[in-house]
Image (cartoon, rainbow, N blue to C red):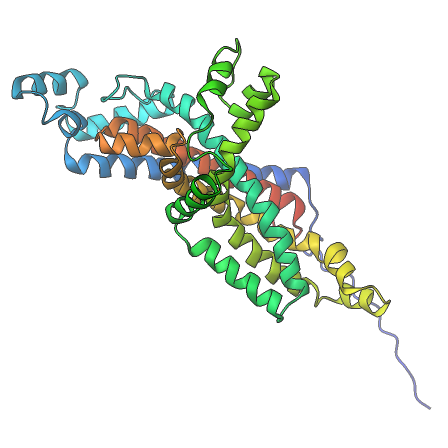
Length: 362
């Protein structure tokens, strides 16, 4: 006769606890990510300062060929650039963290005023470009996943490669040639026509965001004019990111289609199109959210060429102008602001990813 010994089930180890998402956990995660912003900005701002000073002081770089030795020495002493470089560095960091970016050498304007005036234009361009990237990249990525390993998929993969491999200035010039010169359906440059800008300038509480200001005028023609000027720059810059989104969505949708719960739905007779649209779509968006911060940095870098190509007067356009004028004070201020924007964008994206993606541990 065979006896079966019943062993008592061992209790769970005392030290083994199930991970729960507590308020303290997410709070600690947010705090750590926020504190990481400080060294990031510090390193970027310091690099800009020391790289700019490799060519000497900003006064000599900007006005060296236009002022005599005595006048130049007087301007250098008045600006404090004849002091030890470490003293200038410490003072510069103190000014940055108090919001004082100095005064431009070429135009004698507060750098903070330049950042406020032209930063809104760059924000508007980046917003439209991200919108283009979402509208084009995500649906086409789903289409490529649905028709994987077919001619449609191959065509879309080549299209994605062309999007992020084509220089922004080249695609911008190509768009201008086709849509502004040959077809004459879109404006060639600028943020708005002269008449529309005059109407927006008359607003008592203008924001600097042309789309909002155009809505405040109550004139549909002004709004249409502003939006038409934004089409080509947004396409040129947005396609750069659309190619990245297309490849990410395609890869992740294909991966999601191979999971167990999708196989179970497929065994119940759910169509492949519905599987892509309903079951595989949302999980594939999580990697998109995690790379948005990096893509914003890419868009800000591409904004320099895009704004110069289309004479879109934002921070990128002004950065190129100040570089040509060798106005390093203004350049330092613009790059410092861009560093802050990139760091904050990555912080926000990290928090969103932690809230929606259970694989992120905090």
